[in-house]
Image (cartoon, rainbow, N blue to C red):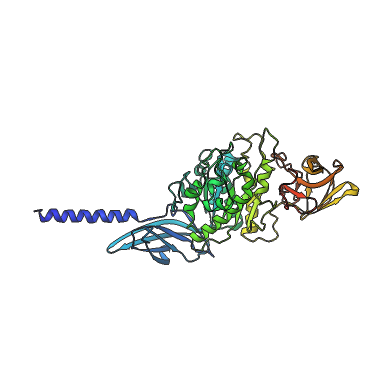
Length: 520
């Protein structure tokens, strides 16, 4: 026989343990945290977490102890997760988010404070996205420039791989934080992305409301690691073959599983992406499929995961590959640049709707201590990206956000000229005899020859094609690993100073983007 006091004490201990366990099992998702930014109107922000199956969860949004709204839901049995969608909120803050779990007589409460509403952008890719502010030009000045940007909040995802899709992040390197010199410059390739931060800062200068930035990138990684099995299968990606440009995780889907999919319940405004170098020698010819497929799959997954709150075709921006000092003179880098546009030469296009691109081939950095592939001018990269975002994501009219591209190519054989008419005004910064090339063919044997820039006006440019004594079939521009020195490419837009992007075009079709395998 047990003494009554002993039995009572044992029962009390079991109750306390049950309460403690229930409390430990009730939590927000890993990235629902103090100082976070939630997506503003017209979408509703998603708040979710984990709890005890069958329990009721009430989420309350408060400001200055005043209740703004309440949402109630139940914890799902199969996943032990709960989710609510807040009513659309105007930008601003700050607010407190409180979640209360009720199960019988048990009540547990969670709180996060200093929550803002604004636009949330996810930044992903490889090392050029991963570079921190401490690694870029004018780092000291940039790191000290945070006081005016306390409403631009940052979050950095830990470097994790997984064989299966995770529902929540396994780790977070930097929880939602206000920007400081320390968390923006936390060593090389650690914590916060410089491109991501500067992009958000430029957006804040224009929009003047909170911006949330999530950095989830890993150096030396191919697109296959960031792609779901679904999108890789759609492109017929073969079994993995090691590549010398791949220095990070390369197993298919492992970063999608661990660093992107866990965010898919979040309501986003858009994504920016800086990747491609690791695919120079890995499935390069498939990049014109794998990249558009990644965009489509991320869009569909985030739309579904947020219960339709993230736009189905949310804006997706990317950086076209910069320059690289290579010992070889092959055209692998130009091919990736071309494939990044799905072989159109520009975005948005039919295969890549609602996208925008920052051309970076003129930002080569010969003396970068991190290697020439890592240009330190991330300010210009981010500025060009933010112009695309303003035009495509925010609908700003009459804003020049991309450089001039030919809209008509006319062969004037009797004059020995190839005439290019551009869609915008052009500024010829310098003339050379190597940036433009023509494909000259005889008996099905083709070779690329330099074409000297002859004459030009505000929107037209003539190339001297006298070096071709046979059949002229194609023309290309800036088709090189290192097309020009820093901001010294031949063609720019006169007022925006945006560089003309690289292109390749058949002369017969006279429209850039109709063919990507001319004169190989």
